[in-house]
Image (cartoon, rainbow over all chains, first blue to last red; front, side, top):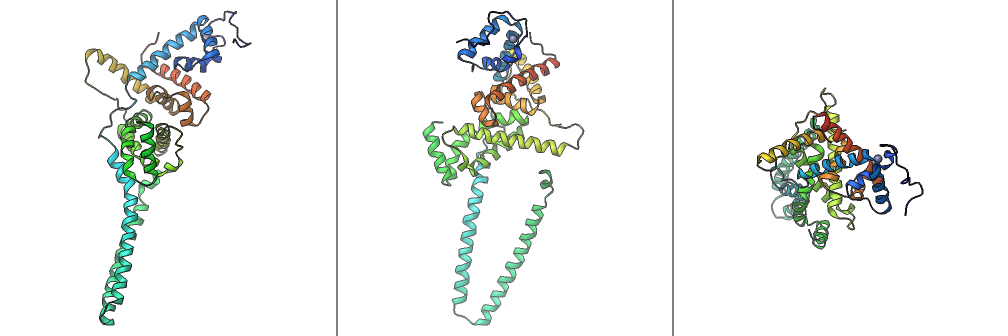
Length: 157
Length: 188
Ligand SMILES: [Zn+2]
């Protein structure tokens, strides 16, 4: 069916009313124009040298872009799977490691406290271990603070 | 990739089995790399962006609507990361006088015969011209003519109506042609 505003009986001068056809023109080049729209545009093409020229330019540009073979080029350095795997698996690994460590710690403390042996000896060993853990924790905390104030952070908005 | 196999692998991924993710990554990394390279125009950055896209997608798999092809969704994730990357780069370079001073890499896929040398030269010019277009124009040409997606798919990725996509494609092609003409390539 021809839409009422169709002016196929009139021969327009080149370029007149072409701006109405911009979307149709690219859809036509990309093979996505159908039905009435397609027929209307084809009628316009018959009378419009400007649009015919534009269609042929666009077709050759499209052809050249496709010929570059950039749909799925080879990745320099090969597959990204190993890097993805590391980044995806690492958080899961941390959860297991930390859970295991805490469970082990609780068990060790329980065993230590309930074991036979004199109180003084337990106190000495206990102080040594607690002191060591506190030292380790402060060093780790400094590292985390350093990492957070990394200048790279400033790059983000 | 066969749709049922893909669905089954993604179901396992959602359950936290990251090893099921490997065939998915290997199947689509080339597509993502093509998209990222087209948009950011630098191989190393494109590779990093592909990696980040897959990591980001894995972490937000619950947002993926399984009625849609996975490739369309992950291309969208990758496109968003590429645009963020370009904005960040522009921001961090805004103090430099020469703006986006990144070297442009021309993809060179194979050894050339004489005939291909001529084609190669045109490709180099087109690649350069593409790199000089605005972000909006470049991405829409990469999605349409390099990734060979349909208007409806591009509309979903860019989150704009199909008409807007068509009109962007129109102006992008005009801009590309103009830029090639400025480089001395004539179109009849
Ligand atoms: Zn016309």
